[in-house]
Image 1: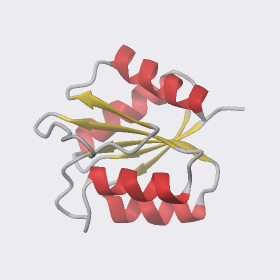
Image 2 (image 1 turned 30 degrees about the horizontal axis):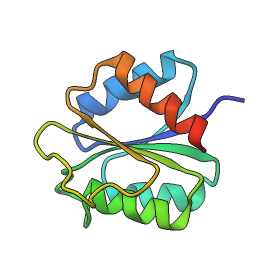
Image 3 (image 1 turned 45 degrees about the horizontal axis):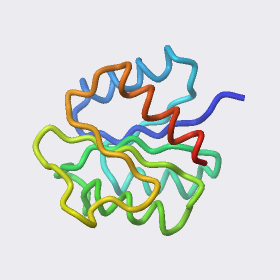
Image 4 (image 1 turned 180 degrees about the vertical axis):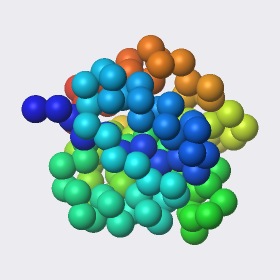
Length: 121
C-alpha cells in the first residue's frame, strides 16, 4: 500500500514540485494551500501518514510550527516535515516526531526525510 502524504504549501509552484517528487517516488499525495485547509483534510482523511508543510503561509490562521503541534497532539502516528527558507526553528518549535529542512529542499533529501518519518510511525 502506498503511503499517503499531505503537502501544505502556499506557493503553487513549490507545492507542485513537492507533489511531483513524492508522486514519482510512489507515494499518494494530497495538497493543501494553508494550515486551515490541511486541518480539514486531516479530519477527513484518517490515512494520512506524513505532513510536509511550509512555515509561513499568510492565508491560514496558523503557521507550520503550530500546524505541526496540532497534528502531533491529535495524531502521534503522523510524522511532520517542516520546511522553510526564511525561518529556522527555535528550541521548542519542533514537536517530537517532527523534522526540519531548509528550503529549497533537494528531492533526495525530501524523500529521505519522508521515509524516515514513515519508519517512525
